[in-house]
Length: 552
Image (cartoon, rainbow, N blue to C red; front, side, top):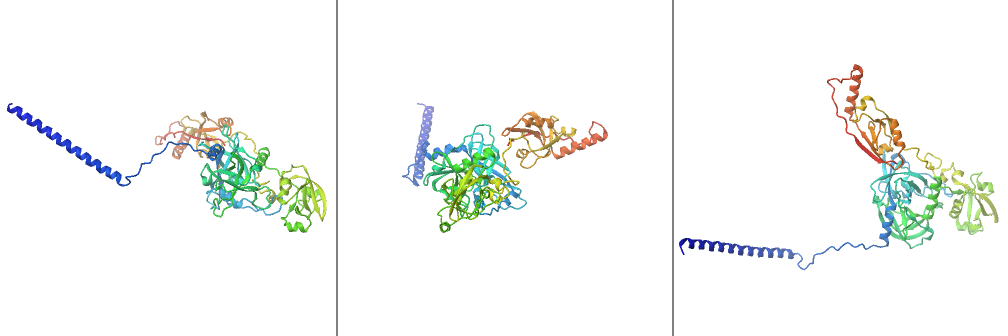
């Protein structure tokens, strides 16, 4: 073996030894590092087993099914209220013992409106919002809610489940006696109404579920039981006999449905008894049977008709009746008006009405219920005890609103006044609520296509305000139909109907651009020349943009 071979062999052995040594070092280092990490990983809880997340499985229950079924039918309502209306809410309805009179039974329960409910506000505050709940009762967009949710509001918006659009609602009619209101929205698709139950079948101890938007939290569901029936909250208001429940009802739940386990509406959540403004387990719902009667009257006539026989009476203690020789009945205080049905029939003060059509009359609320439910123009036979003698009187029922048209203490403050609710009239063509004028020649140059009409005013609560039009805007097209004149605007809007989507193409000229164009026009007019002065500043034509919304 020569010297060169020996050197190559030694070099190869050295490299092999070096690689072997390095590999041993890496292996030892890896083992040590792994042991250190293992020791660290097991130091906190070496005997713990990691948790795993199971696959999702729907458990479901009767409450789950109920909530899913009712979701599409329950709506959130937001109402804009002018400050003037909010500050003037306090009512005076004295006259306890009339046929339906007395102090406003809902004034002390206004907290149900939600955290943004009307309060006394400074003069500079123009308007604010109040919110509540409602539910769809007809596929064509009719909604039941509480009157106190929408009263004094000049703009009512409704939100549907799984629908980002806010729909403008109009009031079909209200009933102050039962605190109910009927609204209408136009969605141009069938909606899913609730199922109405018979509240006469409700029993104490039945499950009850309240659905609504407490504290503006939409689609909240609470459960409880029916605690009591026929609960009278304010004496001498015979139209208000409530279902009491301990299902949590909070501010914002007003107007929402109280339902049974068959998903049927058995009441409208209306009041809470509370010392702190929230649920304390005592809530009240107007029974569905009364709701149906009021709703049917409103969609037929725009208001509720109730009968009256023209008397006033007092709350009478059993001892008083017993001392007068009877064990039930209503002691007549006054016969008013003097030309009313009872006066014509011959009734007098201090008569005791003991029966109506042969049925015993237990008390004043019982009398009110019988008379109010009687058809206007029908005749009732009143059994009367007069000084110990039994007598019968034929009395013709009269419309209470007409009989007491000049007495808001009895029929409610809105009857016959500026805020009277009348039957909804069909819209005579859709209006944007704005005023416009034709463009001048100079103003046409502010639009890309040299045409349009100028907006001269945008009143509050108009559709124009809803879509954020402003005075000075130039309307160029509506739903891709060019607007070159006021006649064009009339034709286009005349073809639209409530609920239609509207896209208004408009430009909003910068004040400086408009001013420059006007100055140039004035100079052009004085000089009689088509050439602008060399010193004039050329302004870029403003970019058109769309303003859109859905017609109320």
